Image 1: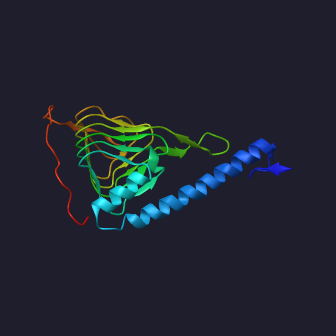
Image 2 (image 1 turned 90 degrees about the horizontal axis):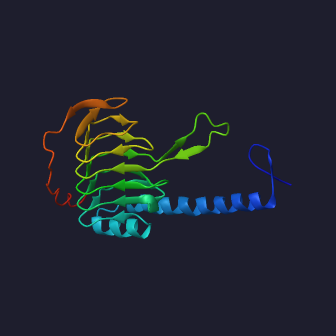
Length: 198
């Protein structure tokens, strides 16, 4: 009686789960649309309030600049004194953990999900992403699912990070490769406040 998009028969229980999942996705899409509208408000305080209501965990002194986009905001956790640049995309379909004193530049995209190219139905696979303390991520970086960026690491502008980055390592390129190492192994700086109307 019930069939999926590929024409396979579904039991009533399977169909019910699919219907509930569809309703959940409609609600999520509406929430993400509201967050996109909120991302245009030039007030960190108002944006932070709405992001927190959507489930984003934002530490003390941390800010998210304007025009940020999310997927599953409840899976995103940001530590203290971290700055997320404008036009960032933060994916929370699996846990996305951003540490303390992290500086993420403009237009950075962090993904927790991607299509499984080997799976017959092209379904998604999800893996957590972890960004350590005192990390700097340059503009237009893309970080893919399952990546762990170690403490104090630096990712150069435009890099595509497909594998783990060790502590204090500097990486760049497509795909990202080691290009240097940070000399200061004991960072203790505070990023400070963000620009007022950004």
